[in-house]
Amino acid sequence: MLRPAVVQILKNNESYYSLVLAVAKRARQITDEALENKDKALLNIKPVKTAVDEFASGEYKIIEDPSLRN
Image (cartoon, helix red, strand yellow):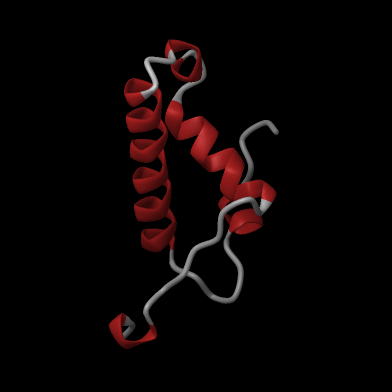
């Protein structure tokens, strides 16, 4: 997938901020897993790009806490 648009990823009135946090958290998980398993091949593709692709494909979803919304 080539640069999915944010509006393609966000559903149900999710915020851009939630997307940024979720992608950053998932990218950190990918990096930690690669370092833990000593698998440098996972880091050949940038972890942020991998995380964005995972959210765009629906493999991961954003779960917001409704009590934190204004």
